[in-house]
Length: 265
Ligand SMILES: [Zn+2]
Ligand SMILES: [Zn+2]
Ligand SMILES: [Zn+2]
Image (cartoon, rainbow, N blue to C red):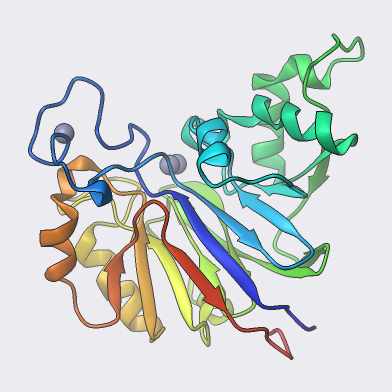
């Protein structure tokens, strides 16, 4: 299947607390460098016809304002953790202007959480002004939103299944610390991939910087960006300079342009 040319925008590249973290005065949180200011992790994927956001972070409203997103066709969810779902209520603005429900794509685990945490939006008696949501259950099977084909990639966040997504030759994975060989096949051949790299010290459910480097090198993707970054990782400038060729830390506002793909894998 054909994938049109895409523009990917990093709306947020920070871990669950964001950077700076509330009340922290470490050198990263007090850095004047714009690249050391990270909202919670999310990306925007756009073709000429279709606009998709991956996750609705607690910063969703500000992210949409900051990136001037006037139209939104769908939300793809990676997993049900709060830093990836908390901003969902604010899709109301798109309901209002687009006069239709917002299409949500989530696995059954995430769906369960959405129904619990946003119960008011799924109740039979709908209060006026609440978000109008349409749930589409996804699993590992490819699907299409507008003109953008989406290939889910199952990864593991300790014991929680998380969905990464491949769009054409671009693959986005956050909140993982393990990828099974079979799923790696879906990533191979990507021109650009994004992977989470929390910090240098070991973590129970996130890749460390070294683990993330090893993973992307093993996949032989020519260009990789790391996201979901903690203030504990260090300042962008220094950490970025220490990375091997072809690997960079992502930053809020980073845009990636992808050519169209004739035969999407
Ligand atoms: Zn997260
Ligand atoms: Zn800090
Ligand atoms: Zn998580």
